[in-house]
Length: 117
Image (cartoon, rainbow, N blue to C red; front, top):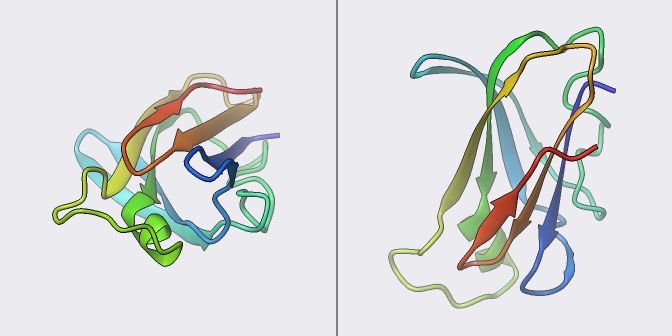
């Protein structure tokens, strides 16, 4: 199944529909943009997996979630500067034949993630 993500808005108790996300490959501190997307009504990539099994490679990656932009678009009054602006998750893929699911649970004040299934 490759690489996928799913974002849940814990402030409103719903998927983070419309959140902007960017996927990068990384080598050390250098990041190369692979794709940018906007999450669908279910808080997922509308095109399915970010990488399918054939395309996912062993290596390091970064997902960047536009948290402040999403909550501002929902009409949430955020302080300036925002407590969370963008959330960047750096992670490694050691087995390209496995499924890597990277969910994000987020509010304007906190986030958590894990390797899902």
